[in-house]
Length: 316
Image 1 (tube, rainbow, N blue to C red):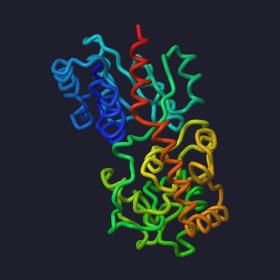
Image 2 (image 1 turned 30 degrees about the vertical axis):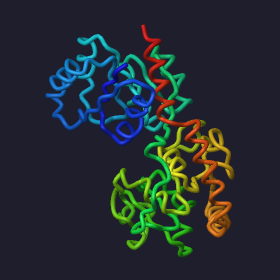
Image 3 (image 1 turned 90 degrees about the horizontal axis):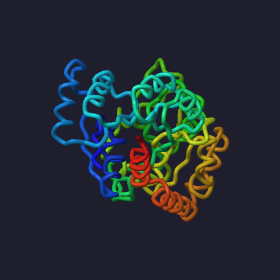
């Protein structure tokens, strides 16, 4: 089976597309969003004619012309699969795209009923890791810190920032943060300039930065879903780091806290966990190794690719 992925995000480029190849299928990845909207139909038609894919695949809202995608899909007679990775936060918009697609995956189990009641073929697909990418590598000496966070500073996560990140900076730990908005004076929470790595960390550098850290922090936009987490959870665990995340329902549903990862709901708990695990390499490494083994064994993009292939095989 050959899938044409219309977005070249790291999630696809380093995740689902190579996962598909790992299980013996073919993948072509393009960045359709780079093409002006009025030219996307022609460009997509040329790609379809050249690679002759069995399906088109799009995730999130990458700036593609959905009408063009639908027109090409109808003309070519091949299905379009949509992965609603912004659920549940942007669920209304996801429903609109799903209505133009042949099959929709969601990361959020609680959203399944609203797709089904509209007659939209749907299934659950979580984020994952790619063990070829998300693995323990040589530490980045120049960017080696005890504690790191790679995440943007969304206003909606301010309470989590105060629970997970702020107390560690206040206590003087060796913390470094990458992402947008951390020094914005209009943000609910900011960090000192000397704790800011500067903008978005290149995705290719992620494994080295995570491997160098003793603890990686995790923030999320959703706290009450049984399945929705940020991609960061699987990436950090895959890199073999001790992962300290804000305590959400999904992390307690999908993982074993204190075995695969650490969970905290407030500043006091964060301080306690960091003091306990930062000062005990053996305990920290035990959790890191168990978390890595768990996601490498149960949450890989090769496994997600099998879910994709199975869904396509069941389409009429």
